[in-house]
Image (cartoon, rainbow, N blue to C red):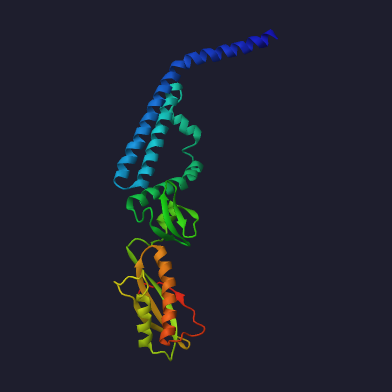
Length: 279
């Protein structure tokens, strides 16, 4: 029993001596750690303010976060070498397996999305508040973060799109310009006077509040379809989605009302279609 107690005491004594032996290193490590935390905080704030002053809020956030955690990582390595002088940074990375292929694949997506986010923020194909469409996702950009771009759909849901997907795929920026064009296709019977229909449809579109006068609306007899003639009705409005929804509903209503008043009968099986063409 005494031999066991003596062994325990020797171990405790060794730990105590080891602690006091490392105490100066621990104090120095804490001081250096505090200095690195202060440097990281100052770098974060200065970089964030400098970039945001130029109107690049999201870019400032990404770069500031990178600077903060980069300084913190460097500080952690320095503190570890101070507290444990026998341990070298190369040994740390080797023990973590940073150079391994498996870990490289693990960090691939993270690094890819981060770089894509930085390139998006530098090139600025869109910014906060812009309305974009990526694949089947369409909505308003809330923020471009380190890993992904946050988009609020028109139905009020938040979609998180990886930056690499946005950078490598086609993105439609609906609000890139002040105005954009909308279009509907209205069929009329072959017996209808097209000139009269064009006049009535044009008057109906121009009566809608949010339709732009310049460029003026286009009323174009476009093609024959069974026993009807398809007329494309095109107009310009402000680029935001709300104006498109508002004007589409108002244009359809106005065309129906004025057609009835002018005696232009729309086919009973009329299906007004919505389309956008590059023409």
